[in-house]
Image (cartoon, rainbow, N blue to C red):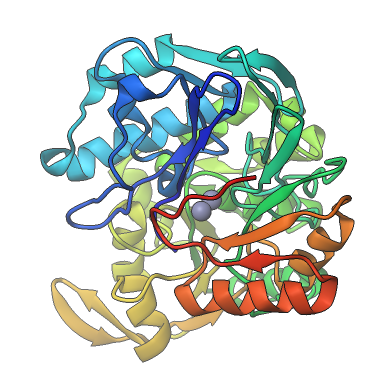
Amino acid sequence: MGKSALLVKGKKNNKQILLDYGAQTGREPSFPMHVQPKEIHSVLLTHAHLDHSGGVPLFFLREGVRLVTTGLSLELSILLLEDFIKLSGFYLPFEYIDLLTMEKNTERIAVNETREQLAGEFNVRFPSSGHIPGGTTVVVENEGKRVLYTGDINLQDSQLLKGADTDYGELDAVITESTYSQVDHEPREKIESDFVQFANEVVERGGILLVPAFSVGRAQEIACLLRARNFKHPVAMDGMALKANEILFRYQENLRDPELFRKAMENIEVVSGWSHRRKLVKTPSVIISPAGMLMGGASVFYNEHLALTERNGISIVAFQVPGTPGRTLLDKGLTLVNGKPAKVKAEVRRFDFSGHSGRGDLFDLISRVKGNPKVYAVHGDGSSCEKFASEITERFGYEASAPQIGDKIVV
Ligand SMILES: [Zn+2]
Ligand SMILES: [Zn+2]
């Protein structure tokens, strides 16, 4: 699953718009195929994750291009892009000031809003994606043809968000993500119950449960879940997740249950600094902290202090990229303490809280589509996209394929 970007050319005036323009993060970030800013009218951004937003500032090194996205996606993107610049700035062709130009040139739309006559020829609608707060899919209409781009999508309700809005009408083409097209998730209800039970077990045996979590979405999801299940023990939250909370507070109408969110936020202990952190690792509680893969952030500190004690626990609540400290912890039970590899003694468990639809739901999504669309499977690892495409043809009779980078498609 790499960086996502999709260039759409209109049939009327040949105007071009871009759907997402992500970055591959890592030591040396990389970007999708080069697109000249002067050749496009606008960038439409589905959501804040860097694999979709990470290259967007490249179009704002000077004025001229517009960004069209939800206000919430804009603010969360800026939060993540600032962090991206802090971590990888040396390798990036843009800097903080370009984010200001980007912000200034953004047309903020609401989830589900329709934007008519964009660039004089595109009618665009932004149905919710259920993937992360502020996230949408995009339906682009041009000269009577209608195309859906799912971005990242989740059909299921979570504690934080309602499942995707899939009322797309007739479509001529569907460009669908394929992340979990070959895997089904466990039922959400079971994952949630198992997680809360584990949290209770750890704290009640006098331990501390560390939940390394991505700042945007997953951290708040876990806090809402604990609140929804009346978790009785202290819950602390640290790092950039706290900044995301502040943004979400201003966009509560985007959440499934704003009251649950407010209660969850009132309930958490906000970590205020190093002396607070040192105190926290001595009292039984749940600590939710970025980074989600133990690469930097306060979760590294907590992990070092908690990993070598048996009564503690570590919950892995997101996909761990191979090669990250989180993945090594999960696969080998090893972690770094004071720079040296050590065998983890705390109880490590994985919970499959995904923001992406699993296999069954992706097929369900295709079955809900009206018309006789061509289907393009993207955003999965190579073989899974191809497999998913041929399965779609088998099940629904639609023409389906897994396009390669740089492929052109005529709708
Ligand atoms: Zn995403
Ligand atoms: Zn993605």
